[in-house]
Image (cartoon, rainbow, N blue to C red; front, side, top):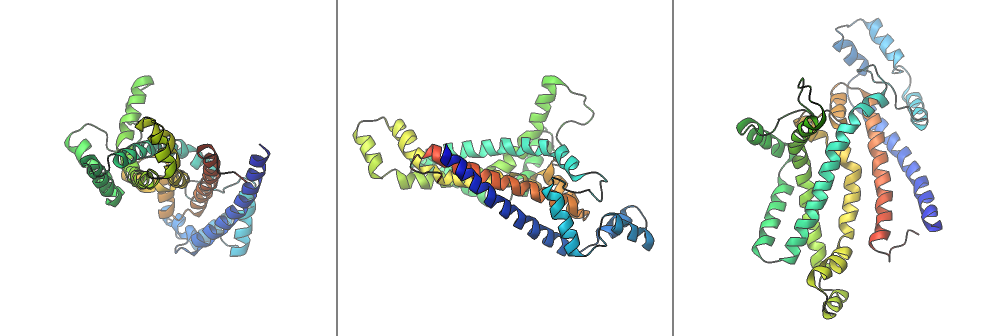
Length: 325
């Protein structure tokens, strides 16, 4: 227990320094982008008075030198203040908190789907290596990996929504339907099917290929041969001995993917008009709403750091030979 506490303490300190570096880099990159937020706001409101533009710059501290803007932003983030949206006229925390549940619902289900199906298909392909099932799984995984996400999403919309009419094409729920209870649940599930498949197929392909190659590497090792020589059933050998050792590279990638789920959903949320954080980031980029972009970057960075720590702890549960120290 003491080793775990010491490990977590060191990782948290390192993560804080990494987060500070990320905040500095993101701020510099956003400020280097072309476009003046004050001009964008003025243009959207139909005003072009220079005095009004200067008032906007002063209101949002855009008239200050960049080092002063950076210091103000870093101190605000350190106190939990992600700033104020230029365009929405609302705190960034409120905007993100409003959209985050929809994104977590989408990405969480896609994550479980991709990881579960990837492990299952990769294991099946490795156990049946050289047979038709292995060829079929490998081909499907290669196609899913090589096909752009937006193309898969658009084709699903054309097939299942436009042609067959089975699933709704856009949104989180049916607007104006007034559904409640179980009917509302089924409506949300129907809206989830295509975005989840679109987002999950790519990562499922990665997990399947990674699991297959890891199992093929482990299955001929001495400890596996010893387990078979003891007369253990093949299913137990695969699950208890082969898969448990082969799954470590998959866990590594799964930990990385979990942290990038919010950022990776931007394209899918845009295609399916899903009202999540990814769509919020895309809209903020078009509107030059720097504070919203920076706030989303900070939150996604924190998620990446947290899931990396969790991944290291999971290693010790899967493989007792790995110590947190």
